[in-house]
Length: 109
Length: 111
Image 1 (cartoon, rainbow over the protein chains, first blue to last red):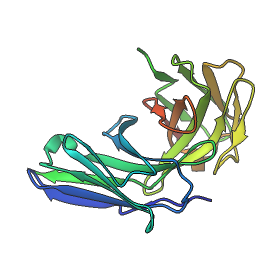
Image 2: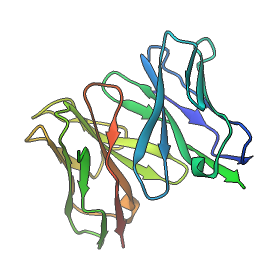
Image 3: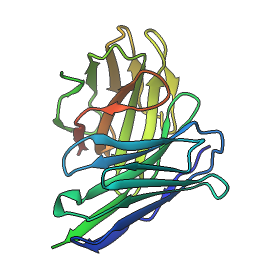
């Protein structure tokens, strides 16, 4: 089945940029997503990218997609303490979404 | 808008007991999902439904059953709870096999 991999932890200082990486296996995925989970809450969609795009920018968020390497990244500019959360990448399958393990981002003041 | 609502939010069960988790969505979505979230393992799909009256197995279906009698509701049942089912359970819905909207989760502890 589909396999979506992420590193488990990332720490950055407030004001720096954060880059969260993800690799996936299903080259036929139409959409790839980034979700954010704050403590004690459900997942909230942050952004997504269509598979025929290389890059998408949305305010402080930049998504880069390398289809050849099946690599997806999320860059958060000017990271704030409120960005501390778990970030999940996900790829669309035939009938559902496949999630990575999540990357816990800790922002150090 | 309520979005996706899960009940209950917390529950403690004894081994062998049964329970049903309820998920309700008010977005007229066709697709609904049940996931479990465990530390270091991300979200794993238990069962899903692509429309009223349909259900299908996900990655980790053993020990769970589901029903989708009404389009807006997706029930997850545990017939005989085991400690390995201690987890946080999330329900989600979507218009198709893409952007999913999540509930707030149900934290289940089986002792």
